[in-house]
Length: 223
Image (cartoon, rainbow, N blue to C red; front, side, top):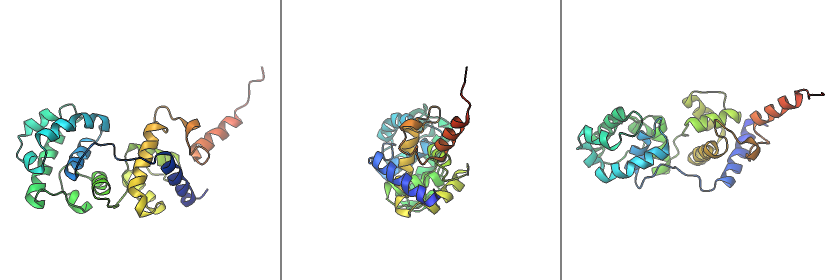
């Protein structure tokens, strides 16, 4: 199957399987999503969601977080991986939001990636989910792994993976695509125990097809 045809099948089936696929970082506004996404780097969404309610209660706006003491932010997020560096990023990010953007989260990749702690992936998350702007495809560990297994990319570098996927999927699907692949990676195509037999893509997944061919060639024990 050609990659373009495979891409259509992947999106269609996953959309039917996960019609409610969404960003699993809890947030109520663009600022909260920005902060939560910065915290999610090398950390699970579950852990972030345990920390952010108290964090946002203490610092509900960029203005309040910008005036916070670094040690107070550190205390609020100390159970998060790399909390010292992330605390500095949250403080610097909030201060720049206030100083340069009047406390508003900007709506371009270029402006967002100028903020401390924000890379292209975080920018894509914020733009796609807070503003419904599809500027790119979020490539996390789940998206990278599943698209590699599905043969939609041969790359491991997130930016190269994103470029490969952008060529295959229509712009209007980019935010949904990320959620769908993340749901697939968390629920079925699990890294340590993939449930290939239960996957809706098992008949089109090159990795599953290859494995079946290998198993068919293994000689049976005739004893």
